[in-house]
View 1 (cartoon, rainbow, N blue to C red):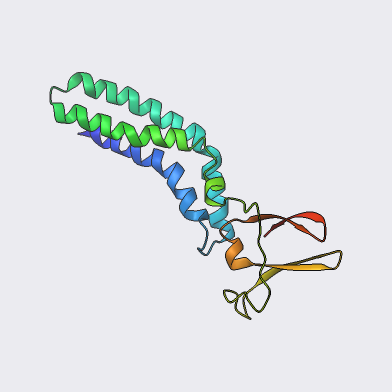
View 2 (cartoon, rainbow, N blue to C red):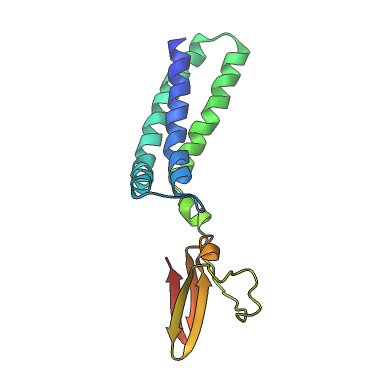
Length: 159
């Protein structure tokens, strides 16, 4: 019984290093400096922590596999291995790049036609060589970075 609880705990720890930073840093959610700090700290530790958890899981699962005669127990070991392997892989991916995909080509609307922007919405305004553009912060939250050209000058609008 202790072995199974330890295996489940290793699965949860491994998943936590991948899932918790995503929850803490996801867009459209109030974020605090502390939650961002914790999210990035977990993200920084994730490659090593998930690898250690996976090694411990495999060692313990191998012992459980040899000691088990029931097929359901062996099947459960395989099922538990899937999230551990996924977390090892995901810990080495740039998940935040998937979440905050840069907007490569901005399109413009005249102020009168931009009905999706309210008068009291926050915008990021850029002026260059007499050309003015405004990026609604609410829409930028999907991307965090907008690559654009304003007044003939390339800009990367971000917040």
